[in-house]
Each structure stands twice: as C-alpha cells, then as structure tokens.
Amino acid sequence: MTNATISIDGKAGEYPVQSGSAGPDVVDIRKLYANTGHFTFDPGFTSTASCESKITYIDGDQGILLHRGYPIEQLAEQSSFLEVAYLLLNGELPSKTEHDEFKYLITRHTMVHEQLATFYRGFRRDAHPMAVMCGVVGALSAFYHDSTDIHDPQQRVIACHRLIAKMPTIAAMAYKYSVGQPFLYPDNSLSYTGNFLRMTFGVPAEPYIINPVVEDALDKIFILHADHEQNASTSTVRLAGSSGANPFACIAAGIACLWGPAHGGANEAALNMLREIGRPERIPEFIARAKNKDDPFRLMGFGHRVYKNYDPRAKVLGAAATKVLDTLGISDPVLDTARELERIALSDDYFIEKKLYPNVDFYSGIILSAIGFPTSMFTALFALARTTGWIAQWTEMMEDNDQRIGRPRQLYTGYPRRDYVPIDQRS
Ligand code: ACO
Image 1 (spheres, rainbow, N blue to C red):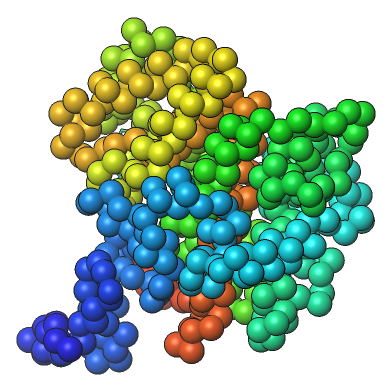
Image 2: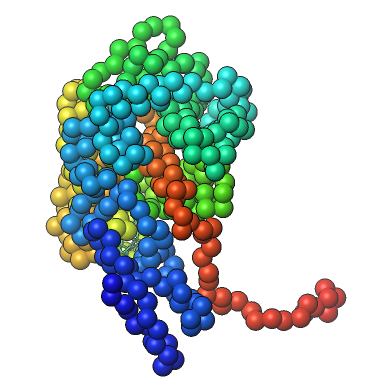
C-alpha cells in the first residue's frame, strides 16, 4: 500500500492510499482531523468517496455502468428487472431455482395492508404522486413492525422483499387515486412489470391485455434505473440509515431526494421542455438560452455529475423509444425534436467543451408518455425501480462493520461568539 503525504503548516503526515477493483484510488484521510486539526472541504462531494461498495461501478469518462460487474447494456438486453434486483441484493446472478424462489418471495408480498387504502384517501386528488409516495412509503413502518428491527438480518431481508414487492402496488395506487379509479389488487400470475401495468391501466370492469413490447420497454426502464452508485438519493438513504432509522423510513427519505428536478424529477422536466420547444425550428433559441449565463434555463436531460460521455442508459433508451412508438403506431413530434436537439447539442462547442451529453432522462419520458403515463408519474416510476438499488445499498451498509453515523463537518463562516442583546437595546 502506498501513502500520500499531506503537509499543513510545514507539518507532514502520511495517509494510506487505497485501491479498489476499478476506478480512482482514494486517500484515506480519516485521521486527518485528529493529526492536524483540519477538515477537508468538498461541498457536493466532487472528490469524496463516502463509503466502500461492491454493488455498482461507473466510469463516467468512458460511459460505462456495471452492476456487480455486468455491463448495463447486457442486463437491459438479456435480463429482467427481478433478476437484476436479485443481482444487486445478493451479488450474483441467480440460478434457475434461486430465481424462481426469489420471484415467489417477491410475489407473496405484492399486496399492501388493507388499511393503507384509507391512508391514500387523506390526500387531495391532485396531489403529486411523489408527495403521496413519500407519505405512504414512510407509513409502511407503521404497518410492518415485524420487519423494522434493523439488527435482525432476517427482518432486514423481509423488509427488502416487502419494499421491492410493494412499490409497484403503491405507485399504481397513487396513479389510480389521482384519476379517481378504483385500486386494483395485484395479479401474481403476471410478471413484475406486467402486474404493475395492469394495476395502473386496468379497470375491474374488463380484462387488461398486456402489450409485450410495452411490458419489455418498461422492464428495461426499470433495469436502467435500478441503481446508480452513490448518487444524491442513494447517499440520502445511506445517511438516513446510518442513524439506525428503519428501512421504510430510509426509502421514504430517498424518494424525497429523488423528487428534485436536478435528480429524478429531470425526466418530467425533460419532456416538459421538449414539449415547450415543440418543433425542431425552435431548438436554436433554447440552445442559446442554455448557454446564456444570465438565464437559469438548462437543457433538461443533458449533463451529469459523473458521466462526461454518453450516458449508456440513454443509448439503450434512445433505441427503445423508436421501437415503442413504432409498435404503438404513435408519431410524436417530441421524438423528432429530441433527436434533432441531441444532434445539434452534440455538435455545439459549449456542450462539447463541458462534456454535456444526453442522460437517462432524455428519452425515458418519451417512452413513458407513449405508454400512457402522465408526466407526474415519471419520477414515481423512477422511485419504484431505484428502490431496489437503495435497499441493496442500505443492506450493504448495515453489513459493513466500519459503518458509523454519517456526520459531515463544515467550514463555518458565520459570526464568532457574541453576546445576546436585549430587544429594547437593539438598533
Ligand atoms: N444545460 C446547460 N448547461 C449545463 C447543463 C445543462 N443541462 N448541465 C450543466 N451545464 C453547465 C453548467 O452551467 C456549468 O457551466 P459553468 O462551468 O460555465 O458554470 C457546467 O455545465 C457544469 O455544470 P454543474 O452544474 O457544475 O455540474 P454538476 O455536476 O453539478 O450538475 C447536473 C450535474 C445537475 C445533472 C446538471 O448537468 C443539470 O442540471 N442537468 C439538467 C438536469 C438533469 O438532466 N438532471 C438529471 C441527472 S441524471 C439523474 O439524476 C438520473
């Protein structure tokens, strides 16, 4: 192992440099404060590894995303969402028997407590599905007391299964509530994604016929959103979990973080932007706005903290968008606008210099809209899929003996100590 020397005020100290199996080495500065009395300053964690993990690896410069070593393109083309969920949680692809057992276990947990339906009725009908999801998922801890003891490995596993199984039911119920239709119970004879489609778009009055192209495209979207290393919402789940909070509460925290337009809310924002652009002739106007420092407008679905190359998930979804729209016989000018925007942006010096490429959100909204989801549901679908990654990362953290409560420090720039002034003596 090599060491890095950090010298402050002429006093040098040695800090071990650790190597992972891929990616940059890290300087272990855990003893820096004790040795020197200094903190490091890294708002936004641009140079800070917050944990050790074996789940997901991203090479942002090359545009590579691996889950447990497997490239995302191979998983999206050849695997299924449930299999990827097993992989993320357990570290290996399942054998046939393990796969069947896992499917059975997840399927057994798809229903939610009947009283949860009453819980929905407390929300306004026009509530954003993410507001409903934050509340309902957080409330799961009030319903499933027998899987909230985080120190019991068996209870942790059951909580993972419950969350993966119930998220489609919860998201579909959020949708049904917003359109005033009755909730549908899960149908365990269907695939994970087929069941979700039926609970969302089916009605009790008639059978729901699943379109296999739609089922496959949505399953791909779920796979592509399943995990993404230590992003903002995953770090939120880990930070919440580091205090010993129960997994349902932690996932609710993750959902809250995901909601923001700079993170999971970007797919909704990207489609809204494409609709606002409306037609390819208006693209230059929006490109000019994105480049104008005085205009807060950004090209939504473009740019990424880690990818400084094409987001591999966007590549898969760009192709899937064409397939779904062709199959459904939809000719959406938004897809033409998206393709043209991508072409123009990728040849523009501003975007080239700043290495801004389409991210996963650029095309996903077009597919989800073609399937029939309102834009307000997009982030809820992202949360449904990402729950798998969140819960796998939470489990990994719980099993890590080095795990401590997450407690960043700060560079304080406020007033130094001063004395209280009674109100009648203040100017
Ligand atoms: N349009 C125009 N300019 C952009 C964009 C964009 N979409 N994204 C970044 N830039 C510019 C910034 O203005 C900045 O320019 P400067 O150096 O001249 O100040 C530079 O590129 C770097 O941008 P930062 O905001 O510092 O990069 P950061 O890594 O913090 O942000 C983020 C990444 C939030 C994703 C950003 O690219 C963005 O806002 N994109 C649009 C929202 C989006 O699509 N989010 C989805 C992310 S993927 C996900 O969460 C699943």
